[in-house]
Length: 204
Image (cartoon, rainbow, N blue to C red; front, side, top):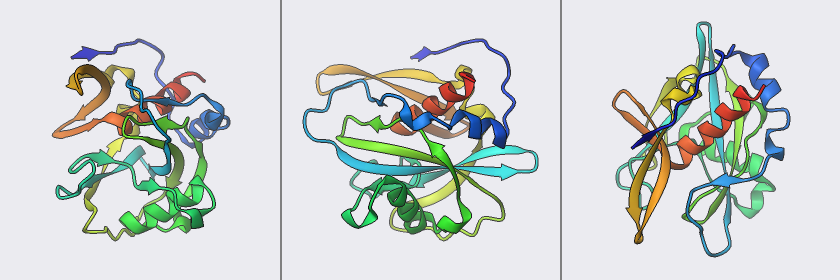
């Protein structure tokens, strides 16, 4: 396991800082898994919900149910593959969020998007960042979502908490980001998108 460490000034995390960081976030080059997918990527989108509390900001995450055929039990953002009727990735992210956790698009203030994230399983994911404010009125899709939980944004964007793990996959060593938080293990594409957000915030 490799731990990525850097020392920098503490960030002032607030809504203004998020808005400034995301002004041109979607213009950055795509990022992704460290192994090449050979084929056409399937467009997808997710929402990165930032919950605004009086004492700070947190990120709302979902725990997928264990019986799903794709990524069972993993921690993810609400979202999924784009459908023709959506008309674009933003609509996909908002629709999937409503379907998965019951968070109405009317309750999401979109700030911008992160760089496209390309996965080794063939998805080109556009992550959108949006603010949501308590109380949250959520209704989980019991088939897809086991639970939702929050993690402080300050923890997730701290480079000291960004770890690199290795595993053998299809005959080669694969590296991926992970952010262990208590008994939660945030890794893969979800962790990679959070690293993108961290870099954008630290670049200000």
